[in-house]
Length: 113
Image (cartoon, rainbow, N blue to C red; front, side):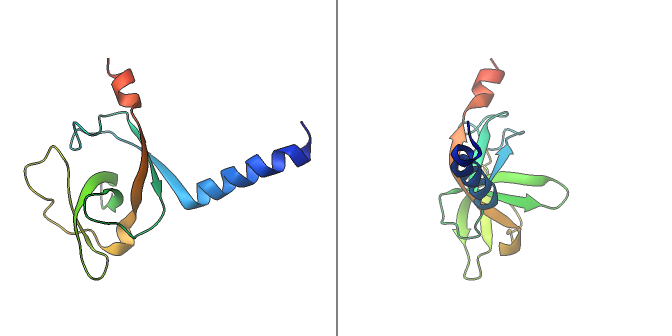
C-alpha cells in the first residue's frame, strides 16, 4: 500500500472521529432496545427530535443513552430510559447533549450469553 492509497481511508476515519462518537452501554435503563455491552454510534450534534435515542452527559455519571421525550425551545431535552416508568427528573441542557444515536451494534447480546 502506498501513502496515496491510505489518504482517503485515513481522511474518512478522521472526519468520522470529529463528527461522530461511540459509547458503550453499561446499564439496563434502555432494555429491551439496548443491553449492557451494546455499542452506540452517535452524531455530534445538539439537534435531536423526540423519540430518538440521544447521548448526553450527566454530572457524576458520564455519558448516558436515553430516549428524548421532549425537546424544548432552547434545545433542552427531557429524557427517559425505555425500561423506566417515568421520564428523568431533570432536563438535559443543550450544552450537555452530545447527539442522536445513529447506529447501534448489539454486542451486549453476544457478550452476555
